[in-house]
Length: 248
Image 1 (cartoon, rainbow, N blue to C red):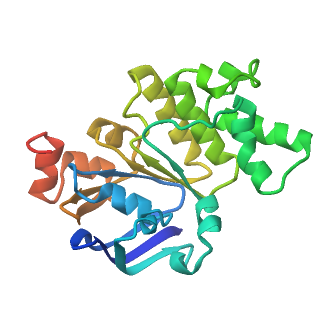
Image 2: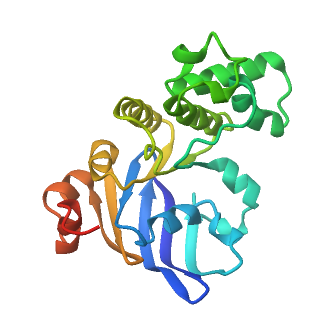
Image 3: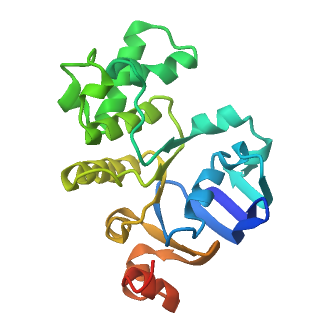
């Protein structure tokens, strides 16, 4: 089933065109890895999926982006961002306890029952592979856990509001290999229930977790295919060159 359908997407910031005629589909319950060098348009593409680009005054676009068959520009922006959550490169926990970080979104959406909030927090932390590490210190400040744990906390906070899609913008860029592996393990499990889009500069990470991989270059979608094919027999020489580290 198609989750996102993107047709002839063009994006400008002032006079600079960041994306050029991008057309692709993102299937439900898959991980799409998005790779490419700096200024290739991959983060602009990711931020378009929950309309974060439009927060910049110079933003203009043409084309169409549909979520579940509905034009996202016709949706309430806050509702869209509930359904399409974002995990950023640097973990951004709230200055609250671990419990209150996770419960924050649920409370904002009207859930006040303490037992229900406890259930939401526990389920979200388990899905983010963090429950066993923090279950005995839920009232501890979120700033007192490690960077890797904070990133999984942010994943759990996103899950607590029950999105359909989770966007990851370089989620492991500041993490050590052990923490990175735990985040990737969580992602592979999450695709059973969610659609995931991962922007990463780590091509090995893209290969490890992506069902499909999209390669962007200078604002254009050069190639989209099953990850195994992209990394073993890409159709475009530019894709092969980037994967082999010849540029980027």
